[in-house]
Amino acid sequence: CPKPVKAVEMAEILDQLTNRAPPEPFHILIVDDDPDMAQFHAMALEESGMIARVVTEPEQVPAVLESFDADLVLMDLYMPNCSGVELAQVLRQIPGYLSLPIIYVSSETNVDRQFKALEVGADGFLTKPLEPERLVTEVHLRAERMRTLRSLMIRDSLTGLFNHNTILQLLEVAMASGRRSQSPICLAMLDVDRFKTVNDTYGHPAGDQVLMALARTLRLRLREVDLVGRYGGEEFAVVLVGLDSEQAKGVIDSLRTSFAAVTFFADGIEFRCTFSAGVAGFPEFTNASALTEAADRALYRAKHAGRNRVEI
Ligand code: GH3
Ligand code: MG
Ligand code: MG
Ligand code: MG
Image (cartoon, rainbow, N blue to C red; front, top):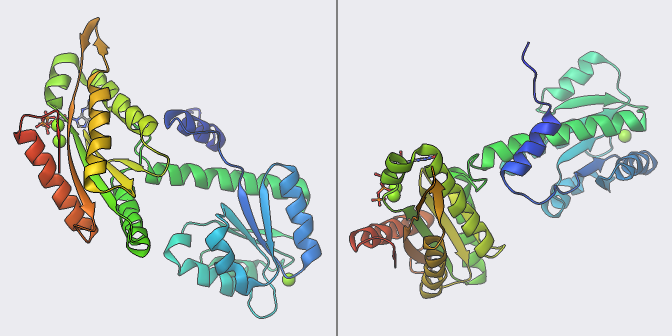
């Protein structure tokens, strides 16, 4: 029988692969109309290093979730005004909370009623009274597993950058916020020059090294607020927040210079790589697809003008 990798180890491996900072403590939202019970559970979770937030009025949960980035929700079943089942139903109708783990914590022992409650899209049922150790274990395992799955869904496994879908979604979010604050947003599309030749000459693993190095250069040299994704094979997308096209061009051009100076080795042979890039900005282009197309056209111009350059 093959040895499975434990979910916890898997999360650690992913963190290493993606060069991420040590993980944030789990954020657990506790919804229970009984404040003493809620505090008791919150203390157990906090003693094990998690961050717990208690809500005793279920109506407040959607608003609280907007500022409290929960990894998991512990939900009482029987509460006045709004039952746990009703609240779970409401949360499942909000796209951002479709995959948020919801665990009921209730004194309900009737299996049929437990099942009915789970049917609305909740993930588990724990019965009160609940040993603190049991609560901590159950919550930790589920929260860890969900983080691993989320990371797999939003990131590219080779570079650890956001994947194609994620960077496009984040571009939409960035543009909406740019619109609200009337500040510019730029999209840069980067494409490694003659990458097929790199693979053909030095081998596919050497090509992978180049992609990882470019990803690292982008992540290290850009600001925390900028968003970096692997758009396709050897193509990367960068969302630069608060910069106009000229400023963005300057930033990407300096990245171009530093990347061109990086030396790679394959079988003792030294080589270098370059990229070309196209930049387009909001408000000149008003929606994400127009912006993407404009950045693509600029990239095409950069390629045709001889590569290893940035065009607007
Ligand atoms: P241009 O300067 O016009 O962009 O030329 P190019 O050779 O970079 O462009 P082309 O689109 O012809 O080739 C891209 C190559 O990228 C082909 C594909 O095999 C390679 N590629 C895509 N994904 C990966 C990957 O994950 N790893 C490696 N090593 N190669 C990849
Ligand atoms: Mg209750
Ligand atoms: Mg390409
Ligand atoms: Mg290319």
